[in-house]
Image 1 (cartoon, one colour):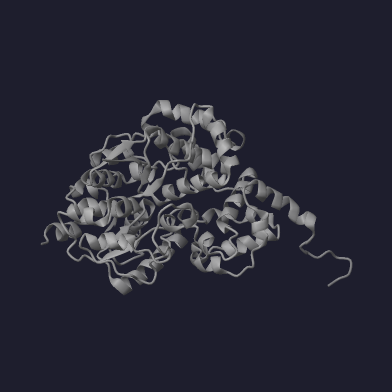
Image 2 (cartoon, chains in turn cyan, purple):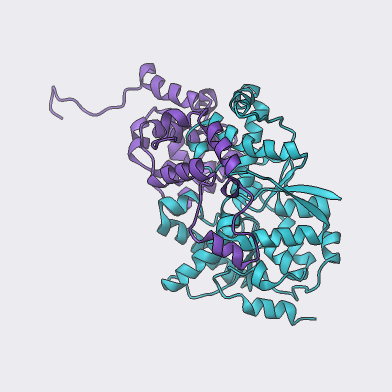
Length: 298
Length: 182
């Protein structure tokens, strides 16, 4: 039986735990044993320790990775920022042994040690590479019935590719999320702004209006070209933008569309038969129409 | 122009560059890498900050840094709007790792207390709870989807939270945190 350490981060367990529920549901369905990373923390987020000190950042990330190492498992995360921060810290320590040494001096004071053997997966790469699309197909109870998915991978899931041990073959033309959507019965066409950033994160905190406009620019183009019925993201931060912020923009009269959005883990949970009240229970853009289409299908 | 009156010019001598360069180097940016920037603009072509219309996006930030113009970064907050997306690192033909420069500038600015308030809030949450991003009402949200009210992180594990704080007291946070580490 496969085992994996579930790294939660902040936004998934505290803001959108329906993603956490979905990740647990899907891994369970696929026969993967989830190992809890007791006492794990924030990755840490790029705007915090990484912006203060390189060694401090690596120590914060190594704290989390050491917990997985003690339990003898790799880690999986549904958040792009966590995926980026942990992997980049890992990369810095691998390339610069002197940083790793300083980090272990810091960890050593509380009886911990970072060996550098843990691998950090993001959710969809783990599904794609470790489980395989054929295994996913076997678990589908409610196929997507040709629902058009507007896919959004998320920056940190792709770049910097040097820091990642696994990735799409062409990081400027990603296909893995598209392939997963299509394997469960959806359609996921390419559109011209597919690589653009959603604007969530530091830009959103510093310049909200500009970052919202950046998202609208991307999405208006997507709607014009492929008219999606559902947004599917590879990252929890991107989901907050596509769902929670979309609902706010609608309320403020900044957009005239309403397109439900899910994280790729939520999409898989739904097609594998999870209760929608739990798998997408915190969605803010109405999602009932999509549930009906999935469940009422063939 | 009147004679005898000083005009504003940038002094392009070695001393001028040195101070900021040393600071950046100490903050983790390789100056040799930085100096090989040819200002080709490929980074700007992919930078979300440029697309969103921020005054200082990545190409201009690299340019200003190579000129030693530290004051720009203390006045303008653009570096704090960087998404850490790493498109620039992926695409740079000279492999200068522009994103590493953004982080180095933030680290230098932080020591002069030139940072946005949400950075301080995030750091404080990170120290106190182990989570930088904490949005109120999480217990109810977790309960609603059938999960325990507290996650197995430091939020739900006091013993590990204390240990984590002890660990952080051994980092640079002990010197630079703009809040007490109790």
